[in-house]
Length: 157
Image 1 (cartoon, rainbow, N blue to C red):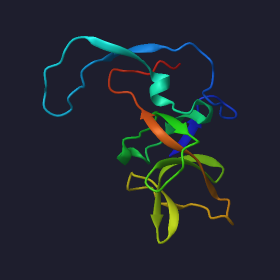
Image 2 (cartoon, rainbow, N blue to C red; image 1 turned 60 degrees about the vertical axis):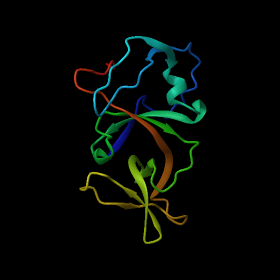
Image 3 (cartoon, rainbow, N blue to C red; image 1 turned 60 degrees about the horizontal axis):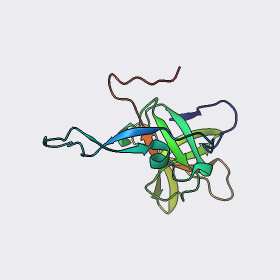
């Protein structure tokens, strides 16, 4: 699974000063199990920048290319929010640089070593480089994956 930056060239942090764009936040939660009655009103407004980006100076967007993380619900075309200030730990979904390219994997530990693990059951695990080997390096931690559902196309051109 490769990742492509939204803009060509070097990654640009999301610290652009723009006025907030607020969206309506419905006061009720949506039931994902048994149906429940819902109230038809807006309780508040939220700014998705505040909800999704806790550290603007260390946060980047990247788009997913490939389906190696499908088992984690992350699929081709998803938009990731990557925070470079969060410590990569075993179990977290991370962006690494491997062989000069960005890849998305879950950080795992096997036989005392750190590995980059896909969740599609097809892609082999990759050993994370140790200090002597620069084959792969952790770049950031994925904190959100945003994907479109049916009938909700992207606004990008």
